[in-house]
Length: 105
Image (cartoon, rainbow, N blue to C red; front, side):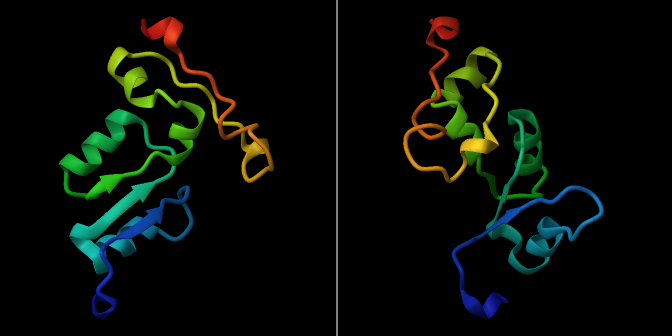
C-alpha cells in the first residue's frame, strides 16, 4: 500500500464488531491517517495527541453546524444532523441549518 504514494488515507470508523478501518489505516498509512465518523471535539483531540490519527474530519458536524468551531469554543450544544436529508436535492440538509448566533453572541 505504501507504493501507492497517497498523500493520506481518510478512513471512517465502524461500530464495534466490524472491520477496524482505523487499525488497518495505521498499519499501512501510519502518519497519514485522517479519521472520521462521530468524533466529538475532545475525543478527536485525544486521538490526535495520542498519535492514533494525524487529523480528524467533521463533515456531518460542519454540515449541521455552520458555526462548529464557534460552538466548540463557547461550549454551545451541537445541532443534530438529519440523515433523511443526506444526499437529497435542494438546500434542505446542506445550507438549511441555522447558526447558533443567539447562543454565541
